[in-house]
Image (cartoon, rainbow, N blue to C red; front, side, top):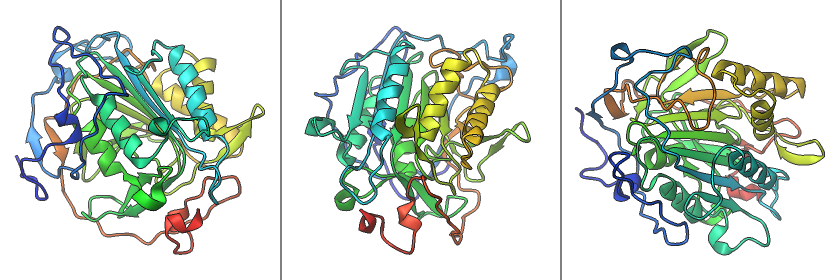
Length: 377
């Protein structure tokens, strides 16, 4: 067990909110209005040993799912963020629509629309300040999302807006950069890194909790810093050289690779992110698809619309993508990671970026022409 080189006896946002330990000891979900945000103190860098549920000691069903999986508790929570940056130089058109459309999809699949179970942060003129997608509100929403969760609970996080990159100060990232999401008030408060997102909603999860995320922004490939990346061409999982392991079952669909941009388009007479619209279309048009089929459908949808971005599937727990069927709530993988936390196997050097943005793509402004991101808004 290694020690955290940056912090000692540190509390992380998720740890400050009590977790249930079993389905028989459920902690009620807090309302968004009464939830209190905790300070963020940085990511843990050490690892610790935990118990695992090895798939070798349990059978697998006809769909390749571990028979030791947690059963869905019936409890769901969702955080949806859509930012158009209206009135800025980097204004987008379809991100609010993405959040609204994703909300409709979740309501069709068992999620509830109330302050205990769903939070939507959008920059609409009629939106209350407490529901605006500021950095503070997004941080609060991420912490709220994991409060009180118990094995069998299901979480969902969707972000549609600008994404960027910033230098990785610890030398952990393959390309030398942290991926970020860009809040509405980023010019004053800064961006939110994948390190912070992982620390807040991935690292604290107990085994048996499922978190699914759709990230529709530039550089979103490893937006949750998950250790396993599925390569559809080779039909195999690849593990990061400096993996960040956790106990929960976390699955992320992202709109593009870390070095790519994502498109903001008009489809069916409505503006929206290409990834979000493709994701919703895939679920509605091909129900009961395997994860491999789901990824193929996403690729085909974007390619048919002449987008070069390549959707990515990353996870915290490996599974058979050719047998396991997509579901928001079922098939919760148990933890198979014996060590959780960030393992530093080799320190990385920052690579030189080569970046081109095509018409219709979301601005990766932090990398263009040496400008600071907020200088373009």
